[in-house]
Image (cartoon, rainbow, N blue to C red; front, side, top):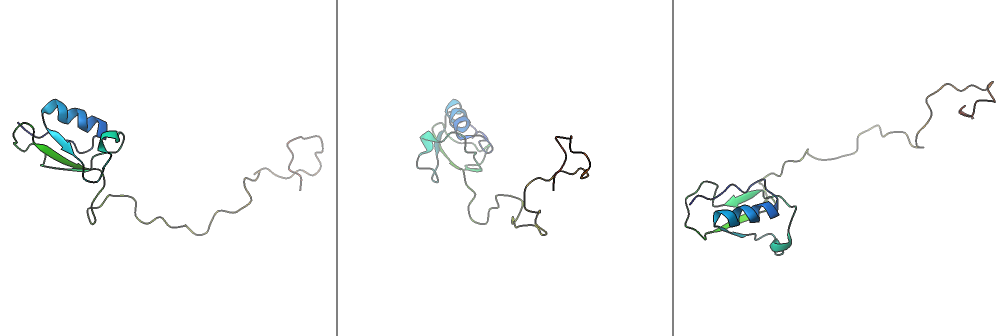
Length: 107
C-alpha cells in the first residue's frame, strides 16, 4: 500500500485519512495527539506515495523544526512614523458659525 499525503491536513482529517488507508499515526511533537483537532500537519515520514506494509506507523509533525522555515512575513517591527495618537478625528471643516448643526466639530 502507498502512504497517503497528510501534509496540509488538520489533525482530525489526518487521523481519519490514515485510518481509512490502513496506516497508524504518531506525532512526537504532540503528546496529546488524540485530542489535537485544528493544528495542521507540516511534514510527515515516510513521504507520501512510499510503498509500505499495512499497519506501518507514519510520523507527522505539526511544527517546523529549526531551520525548516515556517514561512511568515519576516520580522514584524513597528513602522515609523507611528500613526497619530488620540483616536479618530473628524475630517470635516470646522464651522464655527453653525451652532444648530449637531454634528459640527467643536474646538
